Length: 292
Ligand SMILES: C[S@@+](CC[C@H](N)C(=O)[O-])C[C@H]1O[C@@H](n2cnc3c(N)ncnc32)[C@H](O)[C@@H]1O
Image 1: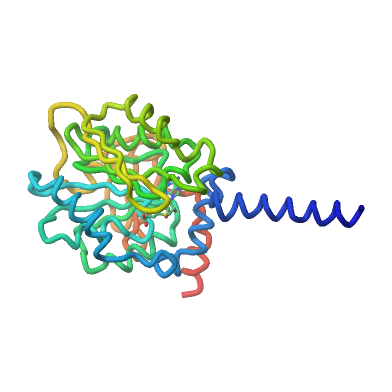
Image 2: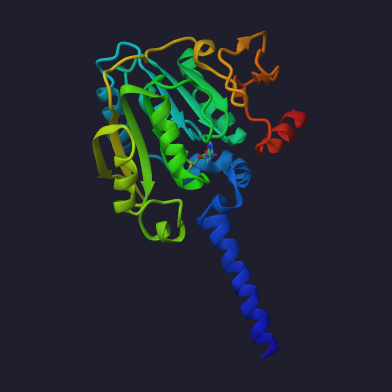
């Protein structure tokens, strides 16, 4: 009887850990845990995912480039960019002559993105920051994308609202929503289809389309309501604001941005990543740097 209780207890704890750390990828334990877990898998992430170039172009690069074809130099924000999947798919398109800003809370995923996106040089900027506070003014980007990320944030509705806030009127929103078997184990994170439809209807969006994408995800395409205005490539210094006090602009001084509002200093790391986050994971990255 005692053994049965012990084994039952061990199985319960193992099941809970599996759910929290593997299925939910730390989402109920907070953004720092999520970022830490992504820091751990970053070097092997692309090997695990095995992206198919043709599939990526067909579902992401080509349709997004086409949706932006009337904008001469579009400015795109990819939230939770990871190893730079969306920037790579879009920048591969010869028709795309714009710039992509990739933002993520895992510093090591960004380090991988920086390495993989090096051939695109000035067409990419990478920012270490939490998606819950996007460091940009309203109506800034021609397109805002967020793939396989929302379910790992503590308040996916609030993040969705934040994505729409920084999208300019007439701009393109492209986000994924988790579906399939595991979505049942992500209550409050993945949206069941009717809830997703209600959430999208509550935002200033039009021409909303929900399409099947991967086994575990649907893709949402939508436009932000309103007379098209804003957007277009601009120097980062014109659109980057302090994530703490919201002051805009930040001053670029050597290898850092400084906030005149609160005095904070945000370094530009050797790999080009702008480090706005100060309290997230990142300690693995610091260890790696010390070892170099
Ligand atoms: C499954 S990966 C997807 C990466 C990329 N979008 C792709 O499709 O390959 C999820 C990414 O979201 C990032 N992420 C999770 N929570 C975040 C948050 N609160 N703020 C910013 N990024 C976050 C993780 O660090 C990770 O890189």
